[in-house]
Amino acid sequence: MVKKWIVVIAIILSLAVACALEYHFVNKEFEVLEGKLETYKTMLEATKDKIDTEENITYIDDIHDYWHGKNKVLKSLIWHSGLKDIEVGMARIKTYVEEDNFTEALTELESLTYYVSHYSDDFKFSLENIL
Image (tube, rainbow, N blue to C red; front, side):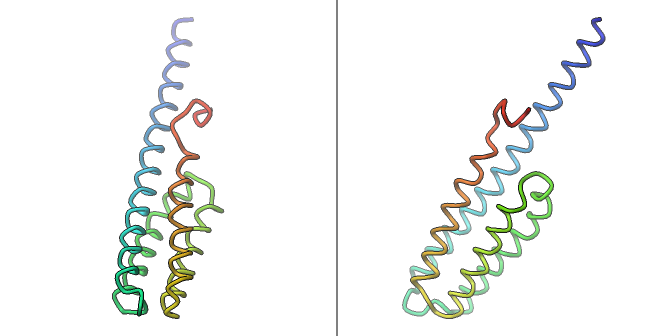
């Protein structure tokens, strides 16, 4: 009987540790992305008269490439639809920047930043997420 309890406790502890690691990884990646988007917002605001510069376009491409690399791992952990929305948001921002449309680019960037900051809330370390 004691062996069964040890096995059950080991399984529960394994699940808790796995969930904690998942929580840490997912939230860290979303925080990094949010920070990159905030930096990009500052860059766009500094050049709002002409945002279609090579530097601005390259930076959003770099963010997209970074996120695409992390996306492969994240897809095994979280919902694909939310990750797809982030990819689409970045593509829209790039298009608006290339068109030199500051208002739309900033609006889309703020929307994406808000989405990213709140999307990770679904992955908080809680008993509900462990079960």
